[in-house]
Length: 221
Ligand SMILES: CC(C)(COP(=O)(O)OP(=O)(O)OC[C@H]1O[C@@H](n2cnc3c(N)ncnc32)[C@H](O)[C@@H]1OP(=O)(O)O)[C@@H](O)C(=O)NCCC(=O)NCCS
Image (cartoon, rainbow, N blue to C red; front, side, top):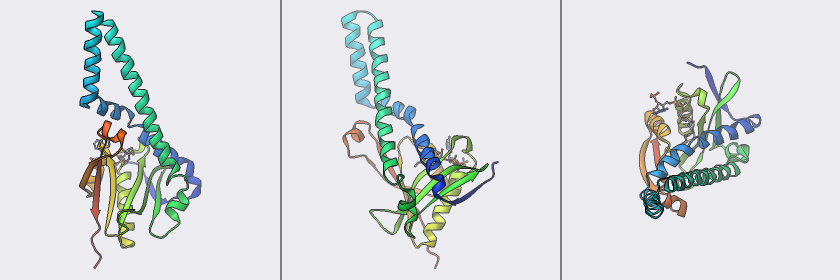
């Protein structure tokens, strides 16, 4: 077991928090690549390229080289698109964490500290669609501190905050590749209530499914 405590974010945590988020998200590149390799149009392109080159060159070497090259380019491209998404988040709510999350009573940002270091983060602010719902965001736990219940404890901190501030529920979004996170949220009591494919060109091409989870905060009456 590891001993940790959860506290509110302070400005000195800025770089660590951004780094924890970016590192946690960049871990998904290999899983995203596997997800892409399962898409029918990708299998079709790879299969057709292989067959065409095999019939035209009558050698295995050229098609194998071409497929290897395509996979390497695809991996780089996906890594680049994903890093653009991470940068986008870093330039949004994580650019000025203090102002975004600690500027009003209805939102907050927490970190978990262990061994005198910040090892996990989570934020919460009102949902843009439903102001009576609290949106949980930016959950990330440093790799060597996972499996100790820190993420679950952060979820419970957010739920307690929601109850204290009169929110009806806590909601969050996950991507199709975030299996560990989904299992963790379900373990805390969140339930999936909606899922959809990201309505952008990249989203449709990658069959990028967003699942929305909700935890209904029991009324205190
Ligand atoms: C998802 C994440 C936050 C979990 O953090 P954690 O501190 O290890 O989680 P906890 O120890 O509190 O919870 C463990 C639960 O998560 C789930 N879980 C964690 N790792 C898992 C794994 N490798 N496989 C399956 N389930 C897993 C299980 O339900 C587990 O419950 P159990 O211990 O009762 O089996 C962490 O893996 C992470 O930071 N990932 C990268 C960033 C990310 O995906 N954030 C979520 C954005 S929506």
